[in-house]
Image 1 (cartoon, rainbow, N blue to C red):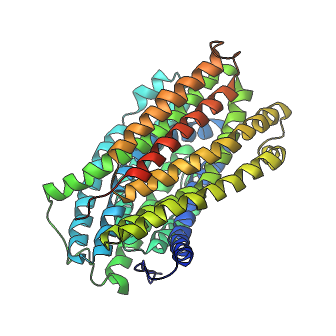
Image 2 (cartoon, rainbow, N blue to C red):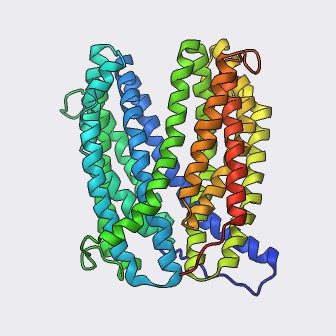
Image 3 (cartoon, rainbow, N blue to C red):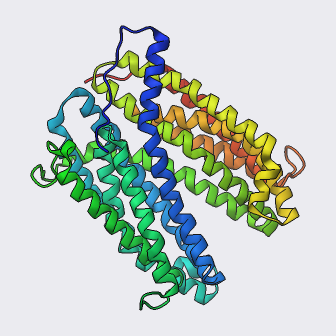
Length: 462
């Protein structure tokens, strides 16, 4: 499980052979990342399906509760994600003595983040009241969040330790323990939601307890493995304990805060759009959610390639191979565009069949098919921007990309989408397709600006 290491570049080989070798390395790193991402998404699907079989109120409560904690978690996930390029760079430079002190600084940040996140999610009832939910649904949602909060420290510790394992090139480690967490979550949901084996039936609240316990099991197993695995005999969490270092924490925060804000901005934009579309009726909202779900599933592949690209670029810079880093950063755009066009053609040709998998309602299906055609174009811009921003993160360039994303998503995408959806200022009001056109234009803007940044950026080697 832990024997995959990033190879040093072979600069004497022909360009095409070097490129194919780097792509194989990306596939080796990115494949387990993809499986881990899918496993994490599966937890949400499991919670939704099983809560829905308890009652409509439980389903609504779990969905609303999840929508409140996920954006906060994504911020901290991005923040702690700075550990991966930092540690990968140390790995490439073979400065192994800096790896465990940095890992411990990440754990201290995770501890502080857990306190903040727990305080937020356990005090959401005023927000739920502002949403004018029916009282019992709000009560279940807050109960779900209160139970979920017990697992937050374990979830953030997992994100910190991922910086160590992924940074060393062992991406299969988190894959294994993410799948373990999903496998544990399924039976625990069954026990707590429906009241089996002597437990009371908790409904949606049981989802929170199941998630917390599955996080505990996964991170406990991970810590045991890290302290006993052969590949980590030189990176022991206990014997290599390090004191809090203000300088080390600042380095992680400097790189990680822009990443966290960027991810939060992107995730929150889709939530805001869903709220804007609500007055157009449940059929439009349902069709939009289908298209968004399809895009999110397809996005897992380019996202995983992007995360692997961040690791590889930072490793190569640490190994003082900037030309190979630039080769893999730019050639990955070709790989990503190929993936994007394949997905776009698939959506163009199979949108009716894809929509039929989600619903039998002909009106919802018609809206979904229409939006999936826009999503096909959306995919191309989305894949390009995630590849560019992932490469820039490998270069530890996160501040300028943050401003690019803010301008592109909220300045261009949201503004143009709202204008096309609800007004006649540019064209006759288009409804939901207007937001998808706005999003595509925003992503296209981000792709161009991030691409320019990537092509012109020259990192300073330490």
